[in-house]
Length: 542
Image (spheres, helix red, strand yellow):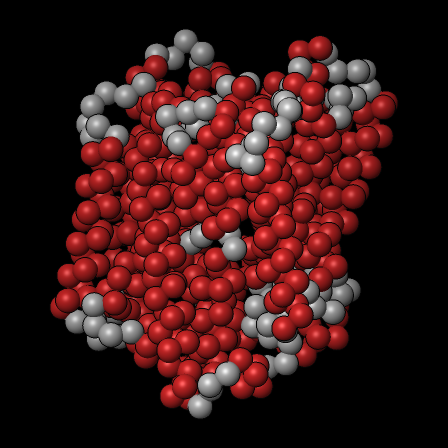
């Protein structure tokens, strides 16, 4: 693209402004305690928690990928966004307040207190690898691709520029800097997506589309539906409804309840109320991607089908930006892309430094002084960033295949983590022996699933393509097996201690009488009602 000086100026101004804001809100170079650096001094309000949680989740991969997905298969992938909403409501009602009351600093710390040190070690290793490879590495690769596409910037320099700017305020400022900047960036990324959607809708009459029925006739059949049968999937793409309803909760428990990169915002809440309401704000925001990130892909199919098919569907988003937006707004939208990228990288960078300082250094050297923990966190963040940069460059050298490989990682590692967490959290009989065996079993079957489903030279995956078990169903059956293992070993091993049982959720201790419509349970019910209503309408008209 030929970027005007005005658009370039907007982008540069935004990048400089977000770095300055990130450094200033955290006090810049002032000395910080570990509580302040890693948990923002437990000072985050529910609005900041909700917005930053959303920005941590939505990355450049989502924005660009959803545009392509909307073009090729309609709103199908929206089911992942809307299935996250019940998980977020559940997080706000059952999980976050428990973490807050127990003063949990990291998720691995919870696993040690509920089970033992081995469980904590397992969770630390996987949390750091997830942050390093998926949250940061792949996000940097996607961001560098965007930088090359829009500015012609070499991938190496694109990665280095993004990494430097993000690491600057993240390493200096800690969680507070990350949370505040993410709140701003959530506005930016939603604003950019809304701009593209409205300009696309405005252009429909020029393509001869003057009514909803004409729009529906111009797109592929069933493109507006998210709950698809096998026969529809075979024709239009997407994932069968039953696979998502069974498989997504497995991934959701792992991602929304136990991923340090995500949950750390709730851990930094200033009150139990903020810990509860923050995830519910995110739940409301998760309604938006279907309308403002996937729908633009459908608009692109109607408006620019030939152009995109000639250029490749991966160019869907860039075509939308270049064809729809006037000078000035292009700069805002590209800035929103960079906002999505920087927020995801910053979140993972901060969580990695927290895990290394709290779960490794402080655990094995409890006498370490507080300021040394912060120093270790900053150095760790720098090292993690360097490793992630190297991985992102490897990802680029492998082409697009590395992205599809990484997408299957979740279904490989989530089953055991989700089984151990959910059964250990709600079931008093769950034992540390069961956690160890289940983690070991999950590691084996996860490795087998990942290895057997690795694409061959022809791009064929054994489990997915030959056996017909897609990654969502792999996650479900792996979860079922891990649950059976956990229950059997629990009954075959000694009962957990009273201290371990104290980290099991007891509903009676958390639920008081509902006092009014502002009660978090009423808010949760309202969000779920809105979700069901919108989903029903879409399925009827689709």
